[in-house]
Image (cartoon, rainbow, N blue to C red):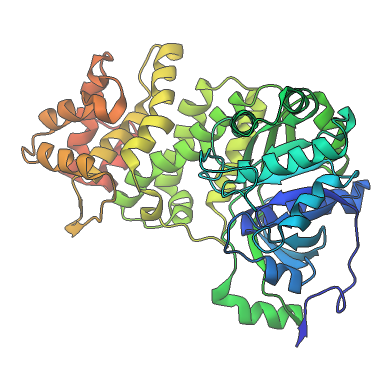
Length: 482
């Protein structure tokens, strides 16, 4: 069996214009795939050098394959279930700075270098007071990047055209701003000088981003069949869904240098990322959180089955289009398209997403993902969002810990679980609803203060407890009296 490398397959070579911190599945199925598309279709002509951000990683495996790997994209595309694959060749090499720090720092002297991309987990963009410039390397990702930027600044004498466009993909709010502030903190700690600080602030662009693509990763359960299909051995095969979205908040120059539009890539350049973040949290994440207790108590275990179920699927669609979308400040057509894409993603036949796997910490998720939609709906419509409140009632029943006589394995903060256990001792729906809804630790506000909300939730709570979820939900959707 052939090994995948540049001796066994034809692959392009590109100048090293991008440094990437992180060799994991997500960036290879997301950012590298887009760089690959722009190289092939828009003459982006950008090669990637991948930096291993922690001591343990896959740089050696990546270099053994000359940066090549196969990407499978599986999911709904143009209303059809599609699985397609291709070899991605934009990565030119990888560097482990823990073994070859000089090679890492030498990247700062490359005049063609223009971009930095990163995905070092949510904990990656963090300040470590113990990091020093003399470390080889610093332990933190921002510390490593500061050292490289300082080398570049000195080598090119602070030239204004040698600043970089820095695009972090870590899943934290305002990731670019946070990264810049930590770098400036290191500049101060390490006494790198005012000229370096000015160069960082004036000639480097730090972008805030929002990234979205489900990447299950290496398909170990079916790799033998994949190897037979491909006809070569690839130790870095990665799978991702068809859907993707990259929102980049930054200067106009960023859009001008990234030819996404030429390739039809779904990269959104904006001067305000917040509406897109809110859209994702309320529609995608909010729909997940709304669905879990309803679908699971209905007797369904998986997201796809829930959406395809006539009753639960109808409930979810009504929730999204009638109660979540009206609370968002983006063009309606754009919101409708995003929502339809979300439903297609939920129906992806190549991904089996267990409802219980996304039930972790459902109370805090409901607080951040759903309560804002409830409050905004009341404010805009001057009435209660009945579907969202039905889900809230279902959530309260879910935390009772019983599904048709079977124990639900609840996963949440121990204090949350203890509180629900105490509340459900009474088994009185009116008392349960009141105690849950007024709990400031759960919601941050007293929901009983919203006119009619407690009565609405209590009504749904009684129906679910007394009649079961199937009967209650079907009656709710047909507007029958409980």
